[in-house]
Image (cartoon, one colour):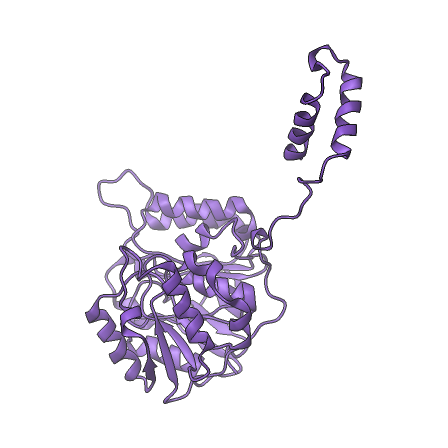
Length: 372
């Protein structure tokens, strides 16, 4: 409307009529008449990519992985040091997978990025296009996956669905692909993660031996941790059911207002982060609340927010006080401290799959298989 009015004013000003001497009624006659003769520039629909994508109508589940499956390794975000890449190889070969990668590309470095945007996008596209690859594993997070979203071949990806897994910055990649194609992605350990027995058990259960209904239990190992951030608690008690969306809080908030914005209404939203002070956590949650979608979620599942506590001498709310302040009055079940995030015992969330959260026993139950 503003652009349309400015175009009209510009057109009127090009006439020989002096606006200040014009009666208001005559001015509007000329303005409306002139605007009617102009091209409808302001009414031209925005480009497709500028329209926020809604939750996919059709969900695509990738085929399950098997022992001996071929896994392609990619670095869609920050560069991975050689020693961590070697750990990735050890982790995944230890699970019985065969690995495929271009070492030069996967170890590429461009400042804080694992090579140029073009290179990283090409690697994602190449892996999905390869018929001999059964799944794609991101070697690490960091920063940069959102930059390559406009460069991905979503039509090709939709025709060649595969398991793709990672977390942290990979949140953007998982949701970009999901929203554009409907392909279920997996928010789980990156290749260089610590593959504890708990982490490995849930990865294999979800990706290799799926059950019609599967309960992701709380990691009892976390209860032995001295750090209070590992202690789970219900912010608002209850049971919530919905499709799973979410990931790293920083990435989820940064996607707001883009074509890759998460639709949260009636969804089970999971969030985690690392290294953010309570006021920054507050700021990002507030952004999601002001945007509206988070208020309409079915329930909210918070992971372990590593290194997000206020320093002893800071004038600050504690992490728990911040969570209680922002979530307590939403009127929906909210739980903190489930076993995911930047921690060792990390379970895997399948994006887009229906699940039920129970704040009483700190559990998530998947109500359907995530792979075929």
